[in-house]
Image (cartoon, rainbow, N blue to C red; front, side, top):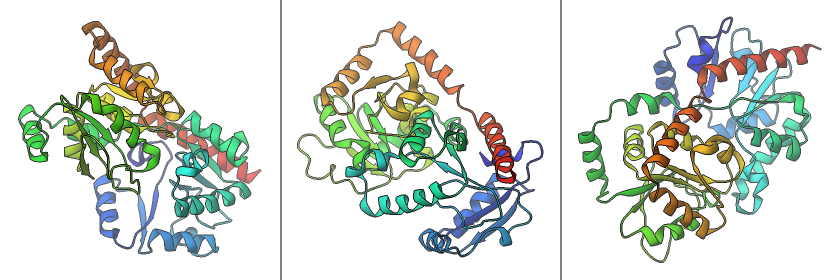
Length: 353
């Protein structure tokens, strides 16, 4: 997104970030962006400390940056500045839709931020129509302050994917201990991701197909003390490994209970991997008619979807491949950047009126 924004006419970027343990990583990230015109301000506060300072009205960002017309916070942390228009991005309100399976501490922090959002005049970028609907209904934000800007395929996925060869991916799978054809899940292990039902649904196929779980370790206990065949749990993986997994998976399984967008769906589409995902929220919105949509609450529905994908004939596979290409074309960073600039202009006009 930053690269695309930097190419927009009349846009000058000031980059602001803060991290205690990962400041060097932030510096490396900014260097790799290769945006020489951007002004950069990095602080060494842990994000929780910075959030508390901002909640207390301390540590505004405007004095730390050259003249800025607008500040865009790309998550639910936003500064206390009263003299600059604010835009923030909300990816989803799954915690409010499904509070019983949200982490209590994280939910509390999010709720505090959302309450502040209700009381200021910040404009909000929602990553899908699903998220916009939730923001209006659950937070009571006027629709005119909520703008939909879709995400797109991460450039890193494209770059790494172009370097793959049959030999390199075979070696990578051998190194990971994956010896059979496999289904893939990518995401943090938390209750919302619905891994318990997914693993149950996979059991009838487990003699022929492994289930590989890749992603950060969360707080979901559903992977412990499970009956039946166990999945291969890799934890966090590199971009190279992730690209290998997508490219070699028999299908990508993503029956999450709720998502604001569902970026892994686009990643799987890029590699031409069949996708099974949920028939609700941002997943259905992103996948459209290019994926197998199932009821995530019903193990049998997930199983039937897997069976149907496995039994596709050549004509159905070709049609699905065409649909995946068409879906990918709907989501691009240049379009997202143009729409974001329009949101900035709208926010400034609203703030000045």
